[in-house]
Image (cartoon, one colour):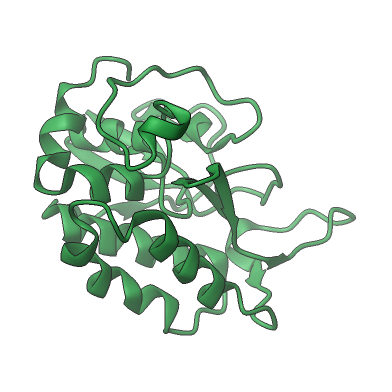
Amino acid sequence: MTILLHPTYFPSIATFVAIAKADKVVMELHDNYQKQTYRNRCFIYTANGKLQLSVPVIFSQKNRQKYSEIKIANSYKWQDNHLKSLESAYRSSPFYEFYIDELQTLFTQHFETILDFNLKCFEVICDCLQLEIKPSKTNTFEKEPETLKDFRGLVNAKKENKITLNPYTQVFYAKHGYINNLSILDLLFNEGTNTINYLESQNSI
């Protein structure tokens, strides 16, 4: 199965379930940018519950803009803030020390566009998971692709389908209970080398 996805900021666990079950991955590069999506945000689990991390972007709704054209608002110190949030949320998780050095490079490099940053995030996560995936990229936008399994709907943060995943141990479970379908980072820090087995065992995608 070849699947079609939007590149997103540290994709959701559901997205990686689809990836783990796919033979090939194609990234959509020719769509228009939309707000209220995972293109520039992800959710993690903190001591206070579910927290949204958002990459600030320069975007005007007056004119349609291609996703590939959207620049990151690097005047904000968002990288420092996101890294500190990850440390606060996951430093007591079983696999934080195992992966944080590899992930930390994403918060020290400079990226001009959100698309380039998201593609790099995907590459680093695949390295952490030891997933040998080199996604191909679309040449044009197709509303209804004929030869690809379309998972672009997973990008929607406000209108996402309810996808139920099997519970796993989370750092702050005792305080807030199980929180479903967070960023892949939550699964990675908590399950580590078992992450691929978990992804492949899910039947909801």
